[in-house]
Image (tube, rainbow, N blue to C red; front, side, top):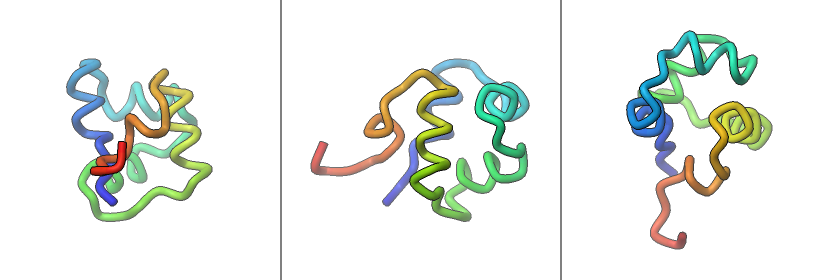
Length: 65
């Protein structure tokens, strides 16, 4: 499962710091998710979606959308 965090951040012109403030997730974790080094938990996906004002499904690259 690929997470589209990097693309959404670029589209919204948001820095890692801005996303961290909006979500409460550490900058290092955001970087690791954006670089596909780790997969976020369901709770983290929810925090990202709320902070970025997108749907959870917008964060996930899936052929089943």
